[in-house]
Picture 1 (cartoon, rainbow, N blue to C red):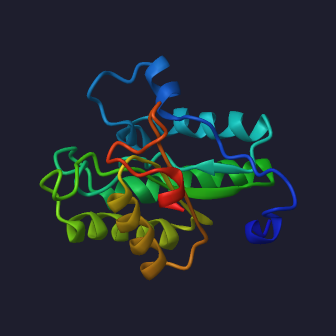
Picture 2: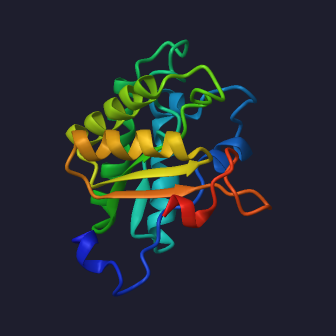
Length: 190
C-alpha cells in the first residue's frame, strides 16, 4: 500500500494503544513497555495480529519510549529494542498479508529548555537514532505521537525529516483547555 496515495481517499486506521493493553496484562508501574519486545515478543506479536485482524491498516511498533534517554538504565540499547519491535511488527504484517509498520516515536519524557533541562540537540539526536534505526529495520512510516511540547515536536519532526526517507505523521496531546502542556494551540502547531 502506498500510504501517501491513500491519504485523502479513504480513512487510514492506525493500531490502537499498546501501553494500555500491556498494563492490562501485567506491565508493572515503572516497567518499560519496550523491554517486552525482547522479553515477551510473542505477546507483542499477538497484539499486532489482533489489531490487523480487526482491520487496522498500520501497526505501531512497541517503541513509543524507545529513545536513548529513556532506555539509559534499561539494560538494553534503544537500537536493539527498536530493531526487535520492527521485526515483530513486520512479522505480523507479513502473516496477515496486508498492512504497514509505523516506527512509533513518542516524547523523551523530559522537558526541553527553557522549561526543563534537556537541550534541543539532545532530543534531536535521540529522535534521529529512532528514525534511522526504524527505517533501516524496515519500518514503512514514522509516527511521532502524543507530543505535548511544540519544541519537542519540532525536534522529532526535523530529526526524522533530515535523517530518513519515511513518510512522517505527527500528533500532539492537547489538554482540556485546547492547548499543549507548553501552551501552543492547534493552529500554532499547524
